[in-house]
Image 1 (cartoon, rainbow, N blue to C red):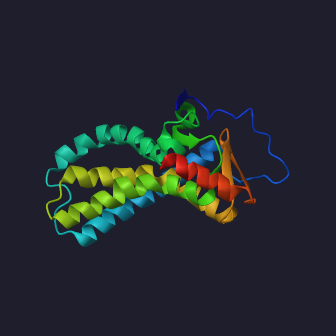
Image 2: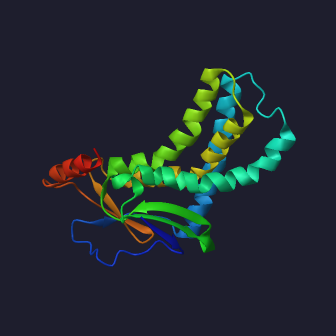
Image 3: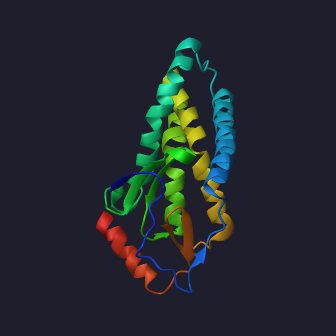
Length: 209
């Protein structure tokens, strides 16, 4: 794995052939704005889900909840990217997994520099929302003794997932289900599946087993 401060590094070894198409994506700053709107909506949804399924007050100690919000937010940002990486081939530990922060755009990222199937990429994008928001909220309700800190982590994690949901919408709108995708710097390319992809995918799964 690699760590980067700055723009998503370009893959100088990749030259898209005629079977590759570039996704129509917003510029980085526009992507950030869309992600912020989506993140706010996700946070409101998570809060609404909690209040609708649990009779327990969300913040029995509002002062502690407010004071904890910023350090919680800062702490779960790297954990959010680590969850993305865990669902990469090689569990996020291979040299193809790149973790970074792009200060000028306020972007944190964890990407896989090789090819991924479209559905594998959707799994990577969705994983933090499921693991850090949906599961903690449902667990808190199931055990019947929720802690405000767990719920606050879940709601803030949902806010951070705004960029993931924005990317999911872009991919679903443009990429066929059996296609393959790869990043080239910030931007993304995709190609239709070919006959050799099934064997290659089986090899990746065998390496992870």
